[in-house]
Image (cartoon, rainbow, N blue to C red; front, side, top):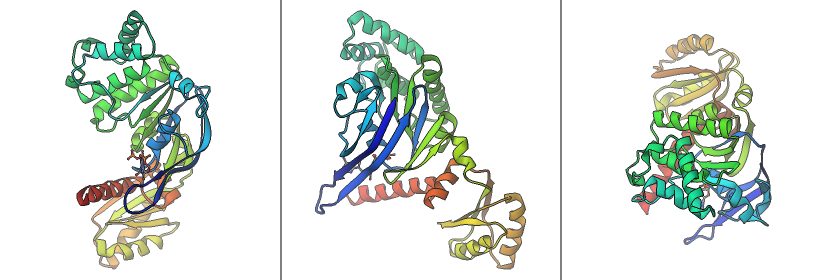
Length: 333
Ligand SMILES: Nc1ncnc2c1ncn2[C@@H]1O[C@H](COP(=O)(O)OP(=O)(O)OP(=O)(O)O)[C@@H](O)[C@H]1O
């Protein structure tokens, strides 16, 4: 369904400096028909840029791709007619009734008025928004609105659908509900799904296969289980006073089999073969050094551990730092 080779996009940053930004630096992507593939990475990793290239909205600086059987560069219209794209935020008019939005979208894809209406009804039923025909789109709840965005992306019955962060901003219940709908697309309607996310749990529970992107490059690829199996041992995170993290890291590093010791803010993280056995020993060592432990967590490998072992950073930390930097920029601007 998707075969991309060396796809890259460079932006020239405006402003006083003549810097360029390599948003995506040559990615290869293969997606088979019927797969549900997640593109996981922190904010600014290059997910949206890749998605916009694959959906013909942005021309690659380098590379080539075949998407839904059509060449991305030579036949973008062919690609566009065969894919669905559910963007972040969507593009519905708030005053337009749901049924009219769906009909209009169908007409944009060249369907007759009757066909567009029928298809609109069918996709609305598929997404459980069929009782909302006359409701203006602006009055829908966040979850209903997102399902309307999906229905709009399905009106022309695409075999491949791209989602850009489909559940960002939704509460946990609406998120789980949307996952059910996305799974159904594949299971009941044979649709291939490619979605971006920065939620580890979403990638883990929803996707057959995950591509992890960081700094414009794919750093890992595989099923959630196979990726987690690459990381052996338990993850341990110890909270201490920020001034005592260095000594805590030394003591943790001295434990039998300890590795990948990292320090961020008030947390010291490391891996050990058996977290339950290492903890009492570390507690004694901290006690002898006069360090008070504020918090402790031991867990089986997660996708965050995969990211941490590949990049030396936690995906959660990378995310919050990026958000803090963006706030800073917004503040200065
Ligand atoms: N039009 C643009 N001009 C300059 N730089 C850009 C442009 N679009 C994206 N970038 C930069 O390219 C990098 C990748 O951005 P992109 O939006 O693809 O990341 P992302 O992984 O989708 O992030 P998010 O999760 O925040 O949506 C970022 O550093 C971003 O600032």
